[in-house]
Length: 456
Image (cartoon, rainbow, N blue to C red; front, side):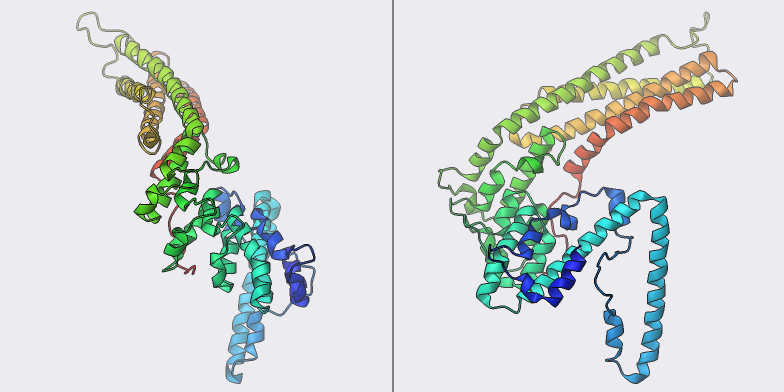
């Protein structure tokens, strides 16, 4: 109930300060990553609904007069009727929209879940802004003691909304460091919080100073990018090979931002960043190699089986051959043409999938290969395997229709319906992996400027 907490802080500003145990409301809020949108794992449809549903307040406090209505009193007398009329229609539209969503919630339970999440995230942001406004009135020493640690905790948990709010109110705290001399970007890289790390692209001249800083162990940002990500962040990516790819993407992205002279700097252990990456990711690299080989081996078996079937079907055509001319009996039948084309295409695509998967099995599996070469090969292998399964199903359906279903519509309808079963099964079971591979390799990526608002 962050909106109710906001009302309490407005009435009692001292609640924004530290208590006797050096705890504060801002610090507790920074450690609740799911309080903000950045900590929620919403799929595409939930994000679409998230942008549409209205915010519902859960506050038990007295209703306040909207700011727009309060501002009417500051306008000249001649404009008051027009403003009141405009605000009245706006209020009516909002109430009608809220009423519509109340009805839809009863029919669509997922909508209620998304609406509750949006209300919580919205009220958490308002609560954070309210706390910062109250803390802003205090002395510099009090501000530093109250806000520095919550800022670092927010960077560690990936709550970039709270990081933005705090730095916007207290710009000098962007240089805050923890007991290991790590600033907010050190923590964001170490804990793989891309939302916080992407704030660096919204910075101006101060970015360089933060990017060249090192922690107490002389680890630069590139050293931290070379360390293995926390397990909870690795688990967000499916498969050890894609996890290795994501780790390489982090290392390459940080490498672009630090000066070239920092690529060869040693930490207190005498290791340069590339050595740290190789050492930390040795086990993950082995797991990624095994995962790639197991996946490619499975695709190889399926592709070889389909190629064998397609080749045999091309020799023994349905209906046999004419005794005199040697041509297929149903050569002029439309269904036979469909069979011929789909069977040949199935043979070629399955053979392509077989060769591509064999190249994955015989790859050298260097670290750089996990970035593009291996995922690209696996994408091509899975895609051609999917095509070969689809074409094989079409070829078999055409054969059944030629032999048993001449001028029988119910046979064609039954075969076409059942033919969708293996295709749909493949889409549901293997297509998500193909989408993940394509998105991770050729998608827009997780790095880059996400907003035009200046960060500092």
